[in-house]
Image 1 (cartoon, rainbow, N blue to C red):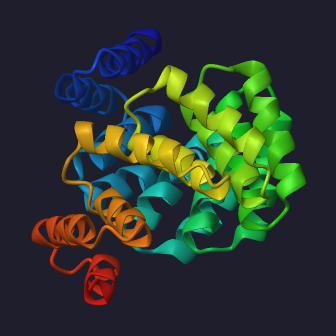
Image 2: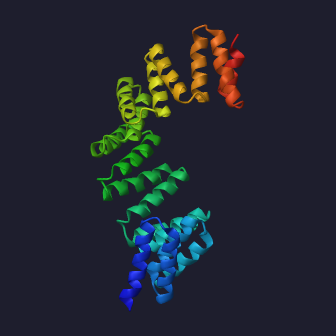
Image 3: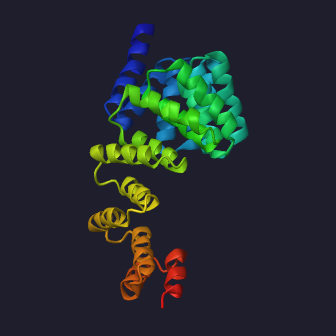
Length: 287
């Protein structure tokens, strides 16, 4: 009989992985009816309910899972995430900390603590958590990126670059990683390295406006206005409503003494977003 009860719970997991959350919820509830002491079924049900946005019922199910088995790192993590989502951050962090106390290799728990720390702008705590994550999963490129971003925020640019290179050694075709590397090198005035990183990023994601915008800034920093204009204009070809780029184009026209063209760019930006202050300020300066 116990094997059959576990089979129902496992069927729920398989159903969820196939994307059928409604049927998965039904399976977990069936498993609980068959065995009210099934901690795993309660925990799985809590996760499903959280995904549906039914946080009160999710919290109840998670607490019941822990009541049955308080040695489950997964259950403590689940409850912690639910509580954080319910704006009960302090208790939520305590639960997730309990999860890593039970299972120090629980990457998902460390990842949750890191994310919460970043939201709370406690970057030193976030750095420690992401460091622990990459110690557990050094083969995961995305975790090196997260550690690198935190280190960049802490002005540890050398360490940040090392982390991003570690990520690229695992997966060198991720445009976001190249973008972040380019931004750090740009901030360090390493314009050649920044340009190379942005160009590589665009090779994998040619329509990314953020990357192309930063590439234009590199050209401006190198006093290559013509190439900067080409990048800005390419962005506007794809997205003519980009108020930031419209404004930058206006500034370039203004600096070149082309006042009517500059005014047209600023006015276009303000028609799209009347509250865009940078365009308003430069329009007021335009003769």
